[in-house]
Length: 257
Figure (cartoon, rainbow, N blue to C red):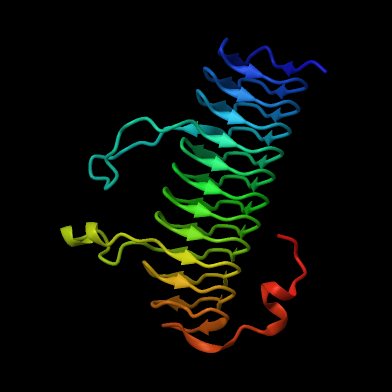
């Protein structure tokens, strides 16, 4: 089938548009961008130069893909070299008002809900769900089949392994010096959530903390130290409460890899 492109769109002549693609009003497709067959692009979408979008992807209105980052004069990130174009895997769903920066690699079948922000140099594994209003900061790795729920904040330099669950409004941090002293530049470190780790609503995780495999952080906890594998922690500061229930362990879910 031929593609349907609204007459108000601006599409660079070097862009490659697959078959059976629809592009809504006032969208802009940059130079050398690639859009796979069967994609649905909403209105006022901006696809920056070089961006690669796999087949069967849906991108809703007012979303921006492949944006280069801005650097404030006082930012700790002062590398101003251009980042490589963003890559979006096959059959992804990307909501309205989403911003995905350059240097990102989004796996197949990922859902990124309305108003989420995915900063530069982030990778997201296949089948992961990024909820409404989630922010994933730069230089972060998210595994496959994770679920990041509404409004959670994943700080820079973090890693979430496969099958992690992050509840609404969880806050992760990477600077114990709160922006003061030169010493802080030596210690920036995000959080690590090992395979199957789960964090309850509104919890706060301090810089450098490792949440162990199949561990659980209770809602509202403030986690100041590493959480052992297969343990539940609760409280302020968080302390070990009990073992992760046997029936909740990943090995007992019957899920396919």
